[in-house]
View: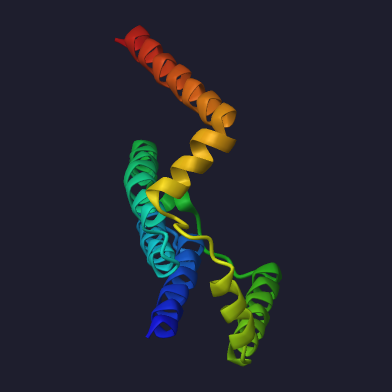
Length: 168
């Protein structure tokens, strides 16, 4: 059952990711990106990384996509501003490359890899993806990058408030 769910989520990620690139309307592309994030969160759940799955949904599908949609709607692109759709040889070459890649991945997926999967499960760290494991990595081995990131975010928020206040 786990393998079936993995293939469903993996196909969902690939299809939604392709829709992000192929959609002409940026709003539809952003919605497809949200779907891609949700499918990716499903893969994290299958890996027993529940905290990372929740953070994927809250941070990326929630906060980051709200920002993307806000900027896209602020730009307010009309259909005529998007231009006409042209079929070029480079697009044909790109489609052929994608089809070859998908075929290669499908061929590799059908070959038995049970031994490699069993080894990966045996090597899995206890508590992988949980709150304790992520907290240990953040606060023990990555304290400086974590604090620098928080300071950069604080400077960005203060700068945005100063710029917005100057326009009022």
